[in-house]
Figure: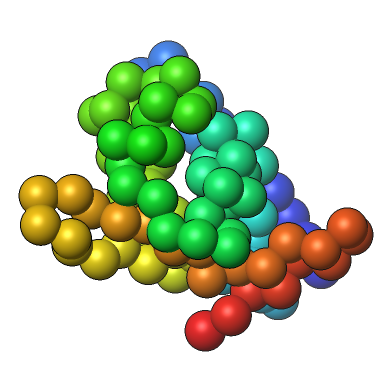
Amino acid sequence: MLIYKHYSKNGVMLAKAESFQNYLLFRKVRVISNPHRFRIIELTENNSLSITELSSKLKLAYTKCADYVKMLEQMGLVQKTRDGKETLVRSKVKIGSAIIEFKN
């Protein structure tokens, strides 16, 4: 059974998930539900891009883009590598027309 509760802490709405059969999958779906984070996965699905390139393509501040990449990396959805001064990002997720495949 799935129970999803919203509650407020200091005026900020938070969510609490209880009794999920696959809580990790739920968290991954929540992370990619943001349009910018989803677009990062799309852009890096077939080739590596630097955070600078991503921020330019998405018209986001570098720090915001780096934060999004960090979230995606923590969930195992992208992989970061260093190339000199640049940080390259590559998706670990394959997005089909109607299927999303999460790779370990």
